[in-house]
Length: 424
Image (cartoon, rainbow, N blue to C red; front, top):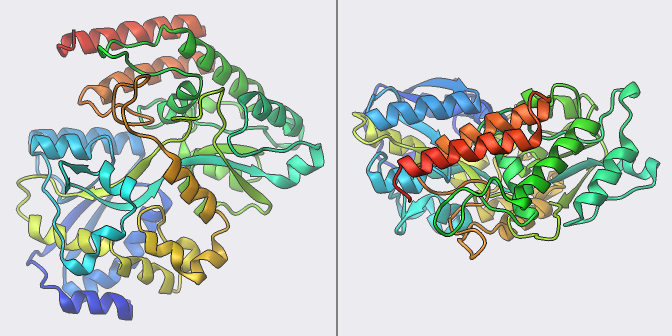
């Protein structure tokens, strides 16, 4: 077994770990989470706690974790959830509050990330990494085509740039965007487009507004942009699929989670803040993949000890010191202290753009958007609403339905869900 880094040893020496033979941990199959399985070998070596990992695709993870947690199934000791679930599940008593010691330095967690994982000032999930969304593009291709992308550019200019660099005969597509159905998959991106066109999920009475002119304009634009300048089969692509395409040199531009920048291997990548169609508020999302403990877990204390370690400053240092990883692989978007390390700054050309995106995200309720959340609505019914709408948007993208028909079906489904829930 590998040994803990000096900083991690200091943490474990200072802590009294709860007794548990093993923990079962449900994680999303993203890069930083996969890396954690290797780094955490040192945790097992130090504590004797066996870690059983259940790594799942994003949509499957959400379904399984929600079902198990809501019913008290007890299948997992630690679960990956995010900002949509944490405050709601915490208020409902589905997950345990997290109160760590002074050495954990909760004040080091970026304020927007910590607030999004809390209910009434109590944190119910600790961020493993945080993110917003931004443009990641091949500057070499843009320069060769004589086009450019600016921070907060117009969607029209983004479309023109995609057209200029689109060269499918050479295996390069102008733009790669999420199309795979899911409230946290295609709808995460699509909602930011809708926001930027001046739309919202619900009006002030929480009636769905998917039949609005803003939604129609946004979805028509999205379908045209991705259908014309994106790779074939985009209705099946989410984060991991597009990351693979980008690293194969097949994407000239990608608008997605800032965390993706940690895993880009193609040379010449540049970054810009998310585009909009006149409304920059909500054009970039805010999210954190975080760790929580289901209520009633018989291993709750040991699970909290693991989360305290896995989301600490010391964990970041352990990844940086690990021979298989280094500073270019540390989880980002969760702690301010990470950005202060010269070693991180030297390898993270995306750091300033990532931080600017996180700090500019606007999850607060507004007159236009009467709910908390950027790419989601922080209400219990949203996952059901978002999942239903996601299927219709994928159908529009694939050409199985017209945009008008897909939006009409989405509006009807959302209206039925919200009406049955008693909103009106």
